Image (cartoon, rainbow, N blue to C red; front, side, top):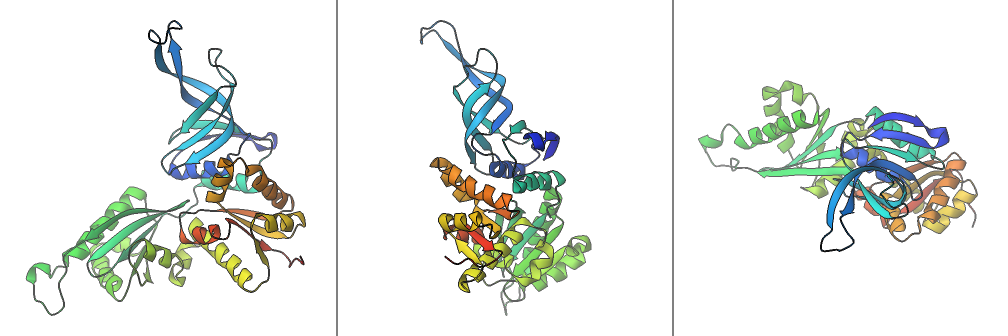
Length: 356
């Protein structure tokens, strides 16, 4: 994301979208009642009042809408609301949806930017996030996933022929399957500018692949961190994210941070100590200034927006922000986010224990 101009003290920021991760960030910082201005298309009716003779065209216009709803589906961001500013031939007060995509430019005006929202914008603009590829494999299968701000993107799976134990097959001696995996790793490294590669498997499959990789591509091999897992596919990826071997690689990565926070919350809950969960308990803790870190799932935000109840959650976040607490939006796309959503989608790690 590129910040073109901003005056956050006055509530204004203008940005350009670089990638899909930026859309996810915006889905977390744009709130109902914000004013968003962007280039969009509006249907215009031409001709007489006779519906049969009228022609409807899509006209490119710049509109400012007061936000009512924000939808993110990993490929686009749809911002719906009421038109507040636009050309004279566009009725003010009418409803409109602006679709934000890669390369879109938009302005956001808020009554007040919360600290966590400002931090999200700055993080997206600095692009400090590590570019991590995960490969989970066994004897004859491999799957690939790319770390994203909203969790991870499951890229592909491959299945190959391998030499069976005790069977002599000269056509398989060159380990064609390992070469196929390496070819995929090289392709993804180039396509996504991968900085780190986590290679995981049950047993010794990852070690055998590493021997071949070190011989074929030492530069790529130098980016590898080995990890152990017991499963395959998406379950294995969630398992790998919790492994101690990958902490060094993922210490700057959003998903690892989110997973660590959720684990800390559950640990405190199990000890009946410095944690609460559920909207009402978190609100009470926030009112007393006891919240150190507030954890909220993006799914809860979306659900409360759809029910027109977002103001209740917004009030809690503002209380935490006023008390200099941290706010972390947890993606529901990974295992930790799903666990938190099972508690109602909101929890808080406390500065001190509260007596109810």
